[in-house]
Length: 290
Image (cartoon, rainbow, N blue to C red; front, side, top):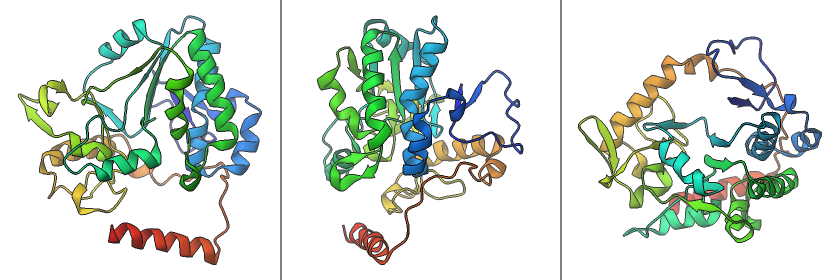
């Protein structure tokens, strides 16, 4: 199932993959969405709707036992067997941003402190009263506080989940290094290929899914998120083939056309002021200096 955080667009053929159900967010009939759309930018609104989709899907189908949320820039190389086993005895499964202090871990640790301990590009929930309590709590917070506001310690839906292990039982933290490998944990993860399969650090950790956050086709970097040379293929040659294969999949599935589609929803856009421009430029300078 695809959760479409927009209105249906007549230019897009949603029946191309007929086995995949596409549900526009406003088809869920949550009255909260109108107010949220007026307050949130495109990133904030996209991340704020997650618990609402969980509640809708569990409520629509009483036989639905578990749901996995996966960001659209995640690519799976293995199946869900281990995840299904984890949710046999747990209620919620999360993947941490990092799992080890690396030799030069300051960058990764600062990213986690700013953005949250768990990456919410992935989360799995099993049908249970505890999961429903979690969804209700998460919904209430994201209705008003799904913000990119790092000075106040808030980063969209993700930073809230730092509190979840304190409030809810049955949360499994999946530290397997083959899950949710991405630019924020390269200090403790090294990809290699063997006999056509990918592994992370050792054969103990097959690559299950890679998070191509900030990926830009036709780039010489695995991510365009920071613009730093450390993420270029020159510094990480083992990721070049992975990135090239992912790029080919994007192009095969209509990236050139779909990337030109503009949202129909009118997301909140803050006014550009001298203060906001100065703040943005200062952040760029500080990032370059550091």
